[in-house]
Image (tube, rainbow over the protein chains, first blue to last red):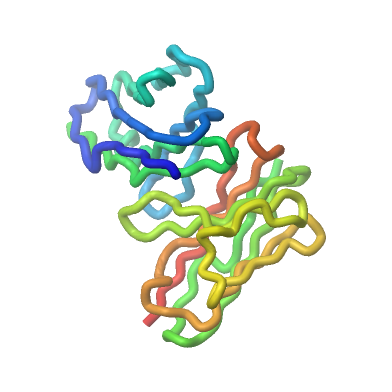
Length: 109
Length: 114
């Protein structure tokens, strides 16, 4: 089976940097996704890591360490619109993405 | 490129009634997923199709839930009879290939069971 753990809630200030962590235990590994989900909306794709290291995409970066079963999503220059839930999902040996509970990020002025 | 289409967006029924949700994936996407998302939780996989075949339905409550993808394109998820705990958003997603690339989600169908 798979176990994915991420913090339930985080708060940060507009303009700041925030790091959302995700730890996982899985039998087999075929990639890790980060999705953003605004309240009442569908999840939208942010990033995908399959090899160790940092992937940068604009204000968002995602890091993966397969040996540690660890990933983080880094959000820079936070904006109010970044207030959302951030979902970590792992594609295990079965190739089926399993999602964590999500981290609710609140950005305040 | 059109996204994943789902209907209805909202549905309210009483317990023991039945309901059906429809999904049309992105054109050319072979893999289709149905996820259940209860308020405050992450999406939980119910069933995955590869073309018109079932890849995984281990978490589908088969005594009340059923799903089909007869022609390998559209899919229908049915609940009969519904229970209070079935209140959730039912998300359909598709990907080009199994095991490769990201999932594209539809806007979801929000079910309330009274």
